[in-house]
Amino acid sequence: IVVHGRHGFLVEGRDPDRFADRCMALIQDNQLRRTMGQEAAESARSGLSAEAMARHYRRLYEERAMQVAR
Image (cartoon, rainbow, N blue to C red; front, side, top):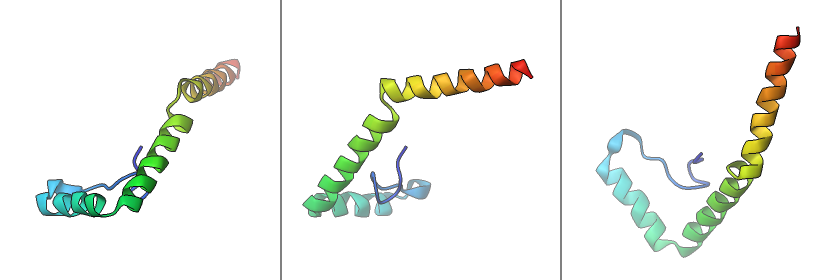
């Protein structure tokens, strides 16, 4: 769901120093924070909306129906 550097930051290994560094980067950079927020919102709207979920379910049902028909 989160692409590192695009929708937010991923911090491996529960490293508190790295986590703090990433938080500070967002606190100090308004444009980065705004851009990441917009990217994350758009990704959620397009990929996690009810319409997107319905499309994914329909595709799964259709794939399953084709498998059963074989």
